Amino acid sequence: MTEILTVLGLETSCDETAAAVVRRHADGRVEVLSSIVGSQIAEHAPYGGVVPEIAARAHVESVDAIAEAALAEAGLTYADLSGVAATAGPGLVGGVMVGLSFGKAVALARGLPLVAVNHLEGHAVSARLGADLPYPFLLLLVSGGHCQLLSVDGIGACRRLGTTIDDAAGEAFDKIAKAMGLPYPGGPALEAMAEGGDAGAFQLPRMLLGRKDCDFSFSGLKTAAARLAEGVTTDTQRRDLAAAVQTAIAGQLAEKSERAMQAYAIEHEGRGLRFVVAGGVAANRAVRARLQDSAARHGFSFAAPPLAYCTDNAAMIALAGAERLAAGISDPLDAVARPRWPLDEAAANASPTHKAGRKGAKA
Ligand code: KG4
Ligand code: ZN
Image (cartoon, rainbow, N blue to C red):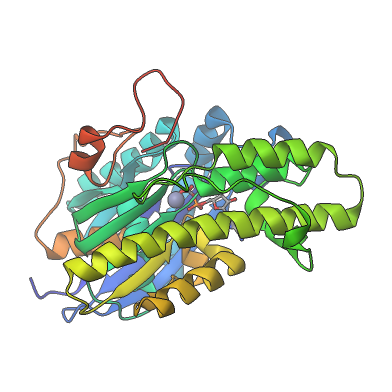
């Protein structure tokens, strides 16, 4: 398909109500015409984390105004759109249903195609919002709910190489920050606290050292850091512990990414090696720097989305929708909201890291 596609994206899977308009040109060039993110941080901060019911209600209250603001900023109306893309999962299902229902209403009222987008596919394409990044690439998707290494061949074509067996890296940042008394959301607060700290002042466990696969684990680090936090009294100690935690998380992400790079390079016979990091934790400068170094040492180019597109946003959802529409893919108006929705369903089914009724990895 060679037409120009102008897509409204909607994102409501966690604590951000976001809408964006993205234009995909016939040659594949991408333009973000607007991207609006309404944060609910103030509503959740008193509870130290996201409260699903509060999130869903806040999405209901603001989704229409945010969608209209995105159109206004793009200088467009609903009549100018070629399609609507809404996150259909994974995420907090009450919130997902709000954005998806709104997207369905727009699609029905305006006679537009609907794309029910996997939030993870949004993160997977997010680096393409800021640069001309061709497929295929090796992706580290690292956010509050997910920590995975994926071989991405194109839209809808992801193969999982590794995943977390317990917590996601962003979750580890958030929970350790909370144990250290830092404000929510913990990742950015911990990064600020780590500034100037001495990472060598505290010993933290290195996880899964004996394993040869590309899986992650952060629960041991989380427990050890929370215990150390109890004994921390001075500001210097807090800075040192924050630096040690950040270094340990960045180290594990780099170690497993390098293992995946080695396997990926063999599979691709050393050609067109591209490494991409995306998701909220990709906003962390220490993590980026460490991964950039890993990529360079293994002969991979390095890309990460602009900071605004690392954390949750609707531009990435609009782009995933536009790429799907360009490939001739859309969804029916009875598409369902899915609290869990792995990108590589075959791998997730073959090796479930989350069994029904147990706490564990999110996807
Ligand atoms: O992608 P995202 O906005 O939402 C999910 O899909 O999960 O990621 C949010 C996560 C949170 O855990 C947050 O603490 C973390 O990304 N995060 C960071 C930073 N900025 C956001 N972690 C470390 N350093 C940061 N600068
Ligand atoms: Zn996300």
